Amino acid sequence: MKVIFTLAFIIFLNLTPTGAWPAYILFLTLILSAGILSRLGLGLLVRRSLFALPFALAAIPLIFTGPAPYVHLTVLQGIQVSISPAGLERFMSITLKSWVSVQAAVLLSATTRFPDLLAALQQLRVPKLFVAILGLMWRYLFVISDEASRMLRARTSRSAAEQWAPSKGGSIGWRARVTGGMAGSLFLRSLERSDRVYAAMAARGYNGDLPASEVQPLPASSQRMLILGFCVMFLLLVLGLLTGG
Image (cartoon, rainbow, N blue to C red; front, side, top):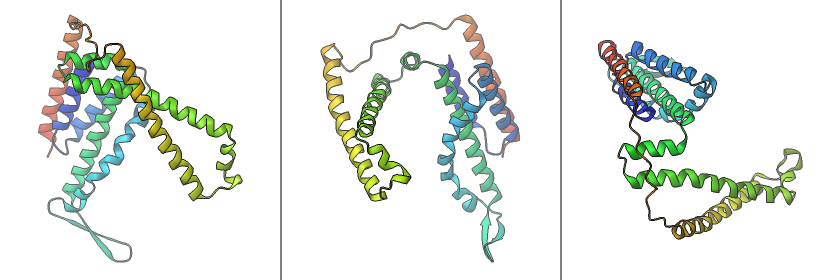
């Protein structure tokens, strides 16, 4: 249910037209309320969602290339910059939509076990290959993390950690060579480890598909909550269509 609700929330939010600020505020209030009820903590939710802000910078050209009319501002000793108010509104709308959408994804991933997410994707008829790639990627991240931890311990045991301290010196070029060598070694070790992992999985009968999980129907209470959530988001979309540009 949480996967369906999160996907619907993101779709309804991004269907809301530009400049529908009352609807945006209500969408944000809805996701923050869900974060409070989940006891995740608003600080953690907001900090993790800031990951979306650098990607929103790709919409900055809209401020200068948006539709007319333009407002001319003087900056830096007589240099004039033309800004489109409509483009600025679009940029702010895209940024806010991206931020709230990432908050919904963070809330879903933080309150749901990853195997349950994979099982939900399987029940939603997501292609098996895509689900298998997600599952293997998630598990192999921990394998790479273990390899990196062993390399760091080996470096520390050889007293290389002291040379990284600013008081111990060490040029930037030397540090770059050491970092590049560690990254290359980690890549090679990861490839070798992946071969061993795949050989072990094939020996245990892996044929490219994850084990099918048991399909459990939604209880009546969850279905009612899901319908209520859809109705609320539809009303927010209608509000956005009435107040947006």
